[in-house]
Amino acid sequence: MIDLAQALRAALRQIVNLDPELIQIVALSLKVTLSAVAIATIIGFAVGGMLAVYRFPGRGALAAIINASMGLPPVVAGLFVYLFLSNAGPLGVLQLLYTPQAMIIAQVILVTPIIAALTRQTCEDLFEEYREQLRSLGASSSSIVTTLLWDGRYRLVTAVLAGFGRAIAEVGAVMIVGGNIDHVTRTMTTAIALETSKGNIDLALALGIILLAIALTINMALMGIRRLASNFAYA
Amino acid sequence: MTGAFGRRNALRFALAAFASLALAVSMSRAADDFIIVQSTTSTQNSGLFEHILPLFTKKTGIEVRVVAVGTGEALKNAENGDGDVVFVHSEPDEEKFVADGWGVKRYPVMYNDFIIVGPADDLAKIAGLKQAPDALKKIAAARAPFASRADDSGTHKAELKLWDEAGVDPKASSGSWYLETGSGMGATLNTAVGKQAYALTDRGTWLAFANKDDFKILIEGDDKLFNQYGVILVNPAKHPNVKAKEGQAFIDWLTSSEGQTAISSYKIDGQQLFFPNARPQS
Image 1 (tube, rainbow over the protein chains, first blue to last red):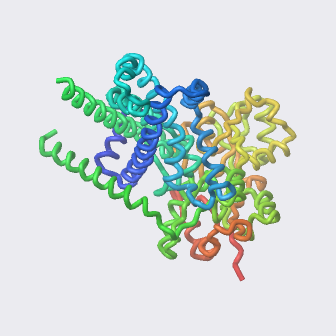
Image 2 (spheres, chains in turn yellow, blue; image 1 turned 180 degrees about the vertical axis):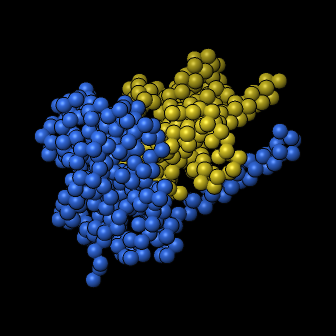
Image 3 (cartoon, rainbow over the protein chains, first blue to last red; image 1 turned 90 degrees about the vertical axis):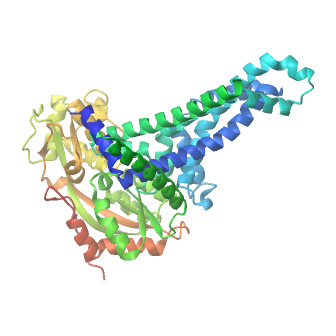
């Protein structure tokens, strides 16, 4: 019934033929996911770094909430964003529902906790190591955060990649807030879901293979940059 | 593979990357002239929209963005104002939607029919029965697997009505032979094929469905399997953001002779999927 070799051939055919619909879908997937990861990285680095260094009441609770939010089901995030962006919701006037922007918002909610939690861990480990030195230099907390983030930059690539992995693979949230509208909000994952439901298993698998290839390429590119940069730094 | 071929492919990839960027930029400038239609999975999965919407857009310049969910969810989303037009298939719910003031007026557009499909070996021996409820009775008696949408869609409501007429409460057997998938038509058909289960489906989705395995149409032609589609403009008095002019233009086109011809011209393997039956407008 399902022929993997046939799916692989279909995937290759799609890539080589540069199917314009496929390009549009891939472009939207990347646009949404990369935008969401970029925003989540800025927030996540800041929140994670501050949680590692600053001491304030409720710090432990906040860290626990962020850790738990790493497991937030995408459908729940999607529903949450839908309720706000719906015309019956408080932000309905913005007319953002069923747009790529709504999808980006939903993915930021999903990705930020992952990047923040991993950043906190990385910065905390580094802070453990360098606490005495940094304090003896009389560094302020905010400059310590910046120093730790800079020092941990190669390890933080992994945090960003974890966030990217979650966002590019996610279907539940973008389906609800994007609506899977052809040429407007159809991404790789929602297209895979749609083709599966049409019984086009080969095409769905082919799209899955292309999605994997793209994720692999981006991972290798970032890892490559990381290796080059660290070789250069410690050479 | 020659080096020249590799270079050509590399060039293609570079072009693809460039085209992706250009597309991403162009997509961020969304067209203003569009409407959102809340519709059902059956109209999307059957491929009807891909056939008729470009014709409408070409004539009017209005882009139609379809959100395909079950009838129940489509009406709910429209009540929230998240759509300009609903295009669904559950007449009592559509009438209620209009009566409650959420919709302006309901127009019948087209019909097709439901069918019961099942594996070729037909465990419950229902093939050829004239009455759909009789078939369901036999399925229940044989405790043969049956996959239900269970998602408050038009097809699901039609199925529940047939069980009711059969005098069977399938919910009592939920999880044993009655499988409630809670998903769209195509996903439910995939489950049915995987579990060798019977299923009620609209004919359009079935004809377009590509993962049929050895499944066959076992029950068809009963009057109770009639499946009427209707279209409604969401009430701008309730939701001022509704694009009433553009939405009504879409409804007028669907029910015009041009739109009706477009619907009847959609065929898969020579078979017509939907039969237009709009009333002539005065």
